View 1: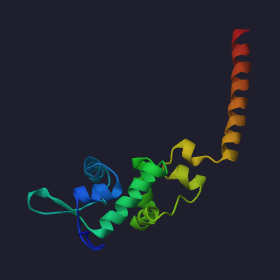
View 2: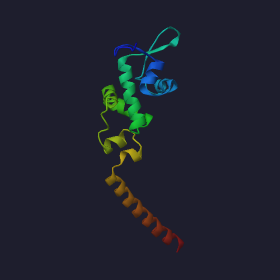
View 3: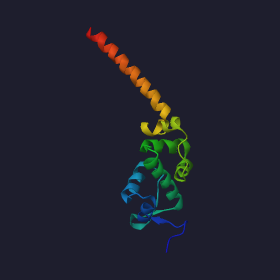
View 4: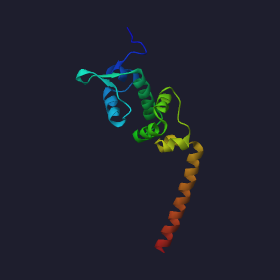
Length: 138
């Protein structure tokens, strides 16, 4: 018999629901102060439905959207737990400029236009380096 939506989840149930190993949940507890499952005698963890909602957001941001741990920490600090829950419900990042500030990897943060502009800048820098190398040699 399946548990109801308001039932508490054990760490194994939470891990299964999130498709992550149990040790990942324990690790996230050390990195994110806002993840605090209820602990019973013997240290057994129980995750409330609200904990699962936050964990879904953390998982999506880290695994699907390319955020770093520091990026998720910053996002929580700047926008709160509601933003994490929203991410878990499928709401993506608010654009590349926000993505870079929120700790997204460079590949995930750049649009095609941004990549093209960076390519142009790289080319200009390589030309400048060649000119400087020529001056230094001769």
